[in-house]
Length: 232
Image (cartoon, one colour):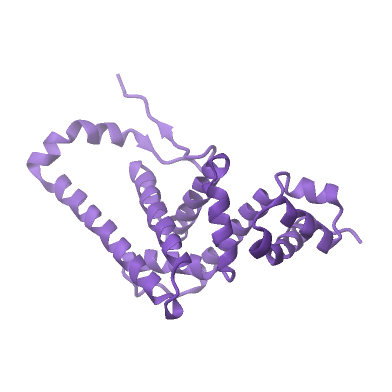
């Protein structure tokens, strides 16, 4: 019987997760997953060309997909927007049932040769959250929102990895504080825009930033976007 691409991909990832706590996202884990599933090694290599690195990426994407599905299924209508963002980050973390797999992934993507990949994954999670929450920004705010949330998400995950409090309560308190800090920055930006003096001082930078536009979907590259040439 022929196994479909998606089925084989799922089987390999599920098999790998059994070995990750012991061998990390390594070649040994990839080889063990192939052996456990009896999938042809050539087929496995075609699905995951970089072996365990691609397995780790697939694991992260699985978590993003679970988070997006939960956001869609939950009633967030009574929440303030900052509460929706915090809930989305919490949903993403709660989508993980194996903390050790995340810990091992953090170690993998901290390596210089994989750091860019790790940054892309975090950016992708932040983008998925904003998109799921209906973000319609089409200017520089598209980037600043995702950059800020990337920092919040990454720091919260690191805190969660060391958290042994009941039901991760310390992590959720940490997340609320980080979201509160971001909201203070947004409040300061609003005050600067509404200040007659400061708005004139920053008129030049504001004009320049106004030329930056959000990318068209689907995006290309690591941090995509477009530049509008000044009109003559």
